[in-house]
Each structure stands twice: as C-alpha cells, then as structure tokens.
Length: 134
Image 1 (cartoon, rainbow, N blue to C red):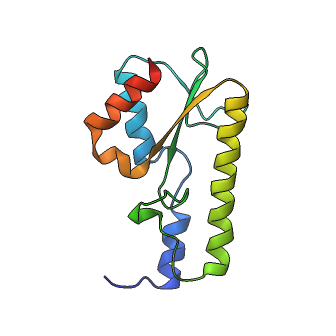
Image 2 (cartoon, rainbow, N blue to C red):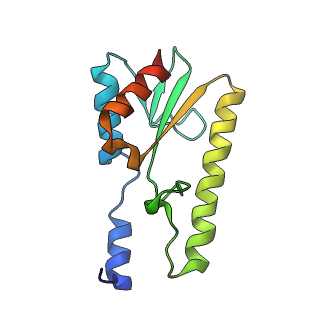
C-alpha cells in the first residue's frame, strides 16, 4: 500500500464531515424503515446525538472508527505519523464521548453507539437497533 503524502492526507481529513456521512445515513434509513421517528443532532442534549428519540429518552451515536478510536478495530488505530498532534486530539474525542454518554445516563437516557465498521453486517445491525428501540 502506498504511503500518503502529507498534502494528500491533509486533503482527505479536510473532506471528512461530521454529519450526514454514509454510516449515519444508513442507520437513519434503517430506523425510519423500522417505523421510528427521531430528531437529528439535538444540540440541547450532551454530545449532540446523531439520532434522538425524545419520548423514549433514547439516543444513537454513529461513530467513525478512526475519529472515535474504536477499541480493537483495524480502522481505530491512531496514525503512526505526527503522533504529537493525533494522540491528544483523538484522546479528547474519546473523553468527550465518554462524558456525553455519562451525562445522558445521568439524565435518564439510554444510549447506543453504532460503530462505522458495524454497518457492513446490516441484518445484525437492524436487530440491534430493533432491540434498543423496543
């Protein structure tokens, strides 16, 4: 595999958005097909959940494996270059995620984290979403 130049890696990282990415859109379509209504990116809730089910007091976060450092996932590995930049940045993301989940739990909310790598097994993901939302 060819190593990315710093310029190309920078361009790749700039192109990544925080909302409306493929994994989130897939989860939204699945939940909608299951018949559930939801609100998107509620900034009045800790962590701005990707999907919020207000009446059920449930929230779903769809996390990218790299950005949120999915433990044990190949995509969740930190980069080997520029570690002085990436290590603290990714650690802050994980700490912010942990705090958001904790704050929601304190408010009586149940949460589900869907990792980007989990969207490949759609029947399994659909079952997980159904169980969470029942």
